[in-house]
Length: 565
Image (tube, rainbow, N blue to C red; front, side, top):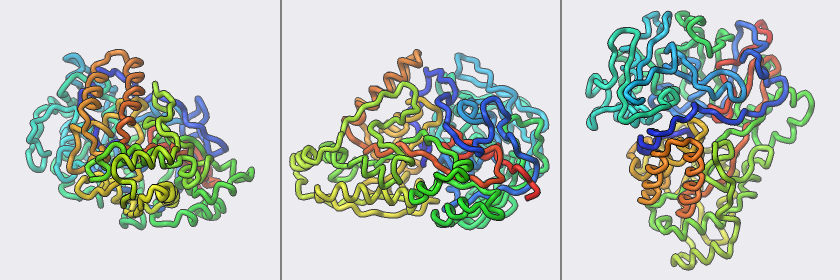
């Protein structure tokens, strides 16, 4: 599931003093829940041993200015640190913004337009060199690199910079990030922004030694600032992390760092992963994995497996974008017809059933503060056909749908394909490898008619959900999140108006109404709100699902009950 890729105008965030990433707690079940309310996040975990992670595909990027989705953001916390981060613990503990490399979550001045941070003592890179304000400044500047900076946009949107600035390798230092001494870094923003600490949890605010990481160097050999460093990496096959000997636990209140190592195995078939996790034999007793396959749901009902099962909402919306620049899809009646035709119940079934998802009707998921439940397009094939007739496309047309080659995605794609057949819309399913999928669909020149994707908020507000997806003024050539490429003057204007609201509750309510306004234009088809159901190894401790990382297991607290096994 893709997290934010490009936010709209910085004005979206100017007046909203949002509380960092608050929201509903993620429900968990069984012994794998690990840390209960009030308990240490890594409860029951001993020190030592190796945790195994079984995955069907590799992470998008090891370089944090390139990668930006729920899975890789979670992984980054093992090897990287930023000025702030999300806390550790189930429920709301994992959505709080807390200091990381900085001593506090920042000191604002100039009416929240200038932010000053002081670095902690005893913070080091994996080679033993101290992490200084210069390293923080350089790491942030990398977000402007025209080739590498395709991930989180917060640095570019919030921090003041010349329009022609192209990062440290091309343009040199950025004067609006000051380093008066080795411990102090000062950010000058474009406009006042009261919740800058929340933006800083994004992965491209990671420090690096000045001058390092040109081109794609960090995609193969990153420089760690967190408790683990990369020992070996074979793209698409395996990744091993071992301890960073220069990381100091006393400087880090978030990462438990209980295991000696993490071993990631990529390229495994989903059914194979499920079989191994259910059996839990040998090293797999020390393993974790992602969401189970739909075919496995019936097999997790035994008491023995239930004890090792975690379950909760991902807090995201899975949707089908409709590219409004394409001939047929440029007509709002065609997009509305597709919305009426897609049967959400069959899409849920294609995704694995109600254990794994519920149907979506609005753009924002239920976890968003202020969100209102409504259904603008209940299934109505007669209305869909009439709209196509009115648009002069009653005879149908061909539509190419970009999809990841993942079982649940494939099931949903087939459900969409079947739903549109009666309208003579011939859906061609185009599979794109997961490791490059978001980069491809985020490049308008490579985009097809539609894409099956998802969006997860950076914190639980409409400010991090609707503007990134639908503000037409920030459609870019790379790292584009407005997949519909909709540029509607009324929508853009309303985004600016909500940004000027100083009452947070009123702003969130306004975003709910904006949701309805956008869906009148039908730039997407909301499909499902997915759940994460995952089985963990019997020797795993400290595992819980984290709302901040698309409902995935929070890696920073995972360990082994008995590290000798």
